[in-house]
Length: 83
Image 1 (cartoon, one colour):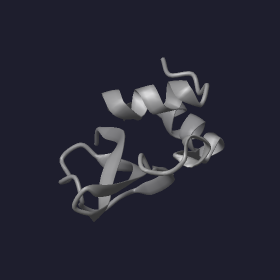
Image 2: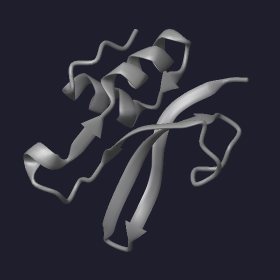
Image 3: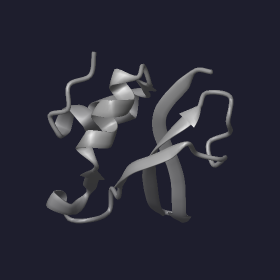
């Protein structure tokens, strides 16, 4: 089973809210998740946009989960090393 760390969309039209989740690559965007490791809320103030459980993120990356391009940039903002 191939696993990715990606965004799962919530919120209303023009007010997006995303959860950073670990999912099987074959699952749809809003399908069943394996684990939730944080959130990304682009409309919030600058310091409150991103919250990530760093230990969970590092553990999933160590197990071989591949982040999407957007999640990779979010992890880099939080100084979490991605191979």
